[in-house]
Image (cartoon, rainbow, N blue to C red; front, top):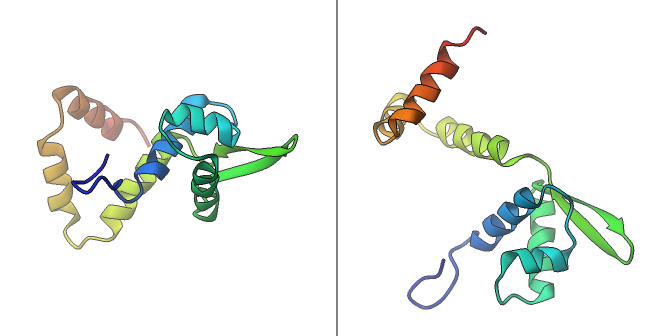
Amino acid sequence: MTDVAGRRAPGSLESRTMTALWAAGTPLSPSQVQDALNADLAYNTVQTILIRLIDKGLVQRRTAGRSHVYWPVQDAASAAAQRMRAVLDGLDDRQAVLRRFTDDLADSDIATLRALLDRPS
């Protein structure tokens, strides 16, 4: 995703990197992440993104041969739920936000939410 000047949106490479790591289901080396991103990115750029994700607590790494391999700390669903809770926690009118969120949901998503809310605690 780029703007009119051809710049990437802030955080887009980090987001795409996380998506690649989740899709892999196994730890990846920087070169494997680079291949998975299918973008014209330098190896050092991919390493920088991965280090930033470590600093944010989203990714872990371990040594593998002469390099490292990286994997996400949480699965994609848990990370999305955490982001949703963080957004709600920062707002005064949670009910309005939830109402507007559900206004645009597909019927199947509403049915899923109802089933989850109706389940025994």
